[in-house]
Length: 386
Image (cartoon, rainbow, N blue to C red; front, side):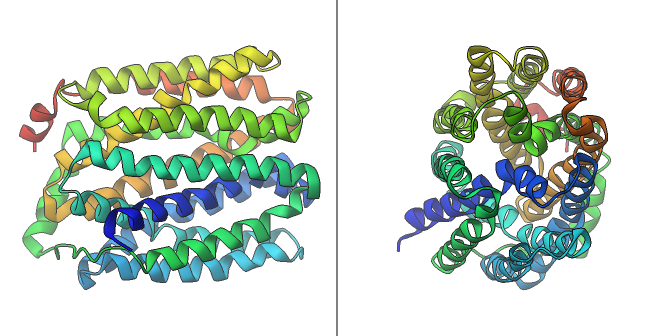
């Protein structure tokens, strides 16, 4: 298989797994008898493994100069960890299995992003169109998951995700070989200097707050939808609307970002997220407002993520981009996800605190918006501040 189709298939299968795992994990854990506090704790601990995981795997990739092998090993071990979901022997064994799965899973995406951008020579338009395949994989599995849930209940999740994990593993052996640049002592010092840069700190703080605000949606939306009286198929359709908007946004993201200010784009995206969480808090029982809120995923995730990838590519020198990707994945998706999952689990109160939780999420997104608009107005300014 040639390089671009292999990259497309890798994104499709990777996010296909997440299309089963992310929306339906809350229902799966609820079906195993866990309370919302237990679910929040499990999600927080599992997500916390993503804080250190990307940095460890980035270090391995730099030392070996073989990011593809890191992805392959991570996929094999993540698959082994996933087998724990097939048996119901209590909370702690399930937690341990999911933590192992999550830790090894973190080996894949940062190196896949690095491989793709290196292969494309930082062509953001080509990247955004290849990345669209991930959204397609996600939406296909979300829709399939809604149907499987109605037919087989929450226990459909282990086998369904395993099948796509195996497909992903096969795909990773088809990727183009792109060597990473090994870091030297001088590079390490330079990286530590960049960590003190105020632009990077503001960018990371804004992205962290936004990711924390996503936790109630990622962890509890399917339960929220069920409690509001929507069917499994309707829930799948709601999520499908969000991903359809994401697909369109990713496809045009490269053109949209060209010659435009990070501060303005991120400010708009984060501001849209404030509205999105407020609508979920106040209008989720209205079919049309709920559907409209899902369309806002185009800005709050797709365009925001594309801007983040572009920021990292611009801010970090080429020999430090693997570590930059790992830093972003670990702090934002790992740290932000863990903090958000734990907090949402406490506040949710088995559904009684749903509205309050989404109101607080809107407040965090507002703080993220204020930080985003304080960033430099152009990519050139961002690069010049290194």
